[in-house]
Image (cartoon, rainbow, N blue to C red; front, side):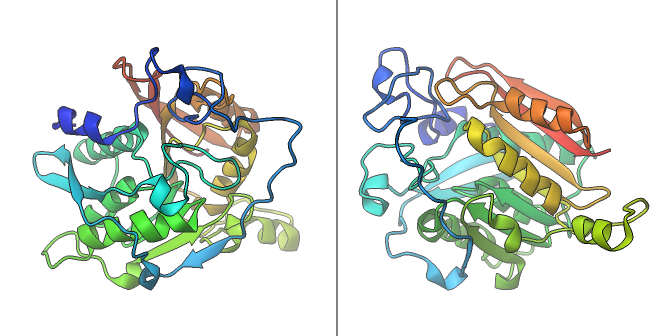
Length: 315
């Protein structure tokens, strides 16, 4: 990332040691284990997940921010992001998480920048080709990695977030300003993008999925078969909650193209207070044994917990 100063001003880095107040309210960037008034009470009734729905491009919210901040990927590529406050959208001020209601999608997390940097590096080194590919960004929030894929020629980009409000107020406006512009390169049409909201446990009903389970039922043999799905799945800071990891992994296996599909994951090594982290997710992947993993990068800049970027694909 060339513009490191701008990046620090536009990302959520988690609390410093002088601000222990925001730990549970900031699970993706927290360094502490104490709550902010609505912590994770095991005795509280669980909130049912929202239904999986498709959000139309025309459903852009009037709350969408008019001001744009530049995020410099490299000398030749700058992506623009809007700013929306949680109080405007959810009626909650300065919160990064309200269980069952808001999952932090209005903040630009560091992992999104780490992920774009890794994608850019793999493209330059000839390890990744996005042109014409089908791309899914899970837990998209601002949608910058998915937008990056569109600017690099992806043929289809689907954006998924827990909250429909995040898609309407932030993701769609960001997509429009970056991808729907008159330019020889990086131009997308409305048919090239899709937006989907809801919990990962329900999301496979709407996304592109392979036919592995169907083929197992009908033939009892999945060897030498090709499953449709996404060529590339992107996710940044999605592995913070331990309880959500199994559903996330199941969704990836259902949606990733076989063979040849690849997943890029960026996140913190550990999210203290909520139990998740890149290593917990990778342990789940390795125990399953269906995918091979590769660590692409470590980031230890002192602004947050140690961050990592991983890549994995079907064996």
